[in-house]
Length: 111
Image 1 (cartoon, one colour):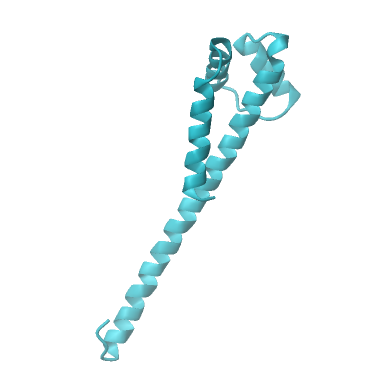
Image 2 (cartoon, helix red, strand yellow):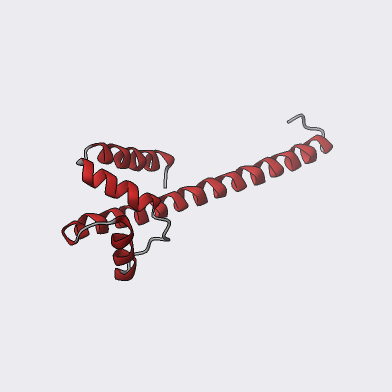
């Protein structure tokens, strides 16, 4: 995933939090700080609801927050992998470039 797409996603999350009513913002913050490893299971949803003190009428919002956090985590992991692969590729390129420079120099070329 391009870094630009990642930045847009993070900005959208930040912007969306600013437009939330105060109660939803506090629930979102509580989900962030609850300490659970989030997943899409009903058990996780119930545990988070209990820990953050959300009412049954807020289940839809809490579920959406968890799903958004899971998607964000996936995007961050993909971005990290892309950056790591790019750095590895650049290191390999530099190594190969130096090797070709030495070979060219041995043949009398000034590269």
